[in-house]
Length: 152
Image (cartoon, rainbow, N blue to C red; front, side, top):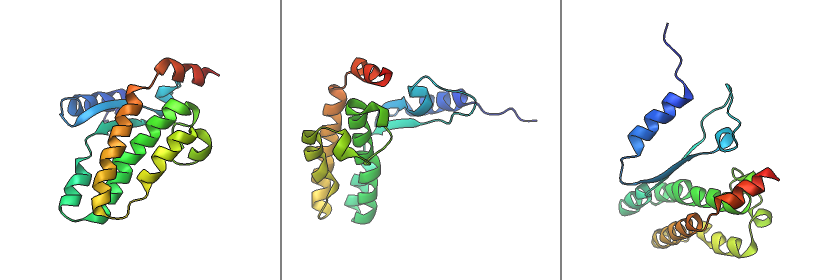
C-alpha cells in the first residue's frame, strides 16, 4: 500500500524545485500555517512571487485577453494580498472584497486605476506600475506590526 504524501513533503519538493529559479523572488504560506494553526485537515496555501513573464509573453503574441487574465492573476492578486497583509492582515485572503473599507484611502486611490485597462499598451504600463507598488509594499511591510494586529 502506498504511503500518503504529506504536506511537508509537498512543500519541500516545491521549495527545492522553485527556489533556484531566477524568476522566483519569494514564497510564503498563508492560511492555517500563517496563523500557527496547522492540523491534519489543513491544506497548503502557498503564495509565490514570480516575474510576470506570462503577461509579457502574451502581450508580445498579441493574445491580449490572455495577457489581461495573467495580469490579474499574477500581478494584481499578489499586490492586493500584500496590501492586505500590511493594512488588514486578518482579511489577507479577501482579495478585492471590502478594499474600500479595509485599506487606507490613499492606497485604494493608487490601486484602483491599476484594475482598469483600456488596451494592450496600457496593460504593459500598468503592469510595471503594479510591480513597483508590490515591491514598495513588501519593502515597507513591518512583520511585527502584522503580528501585533493578528493578536488583537
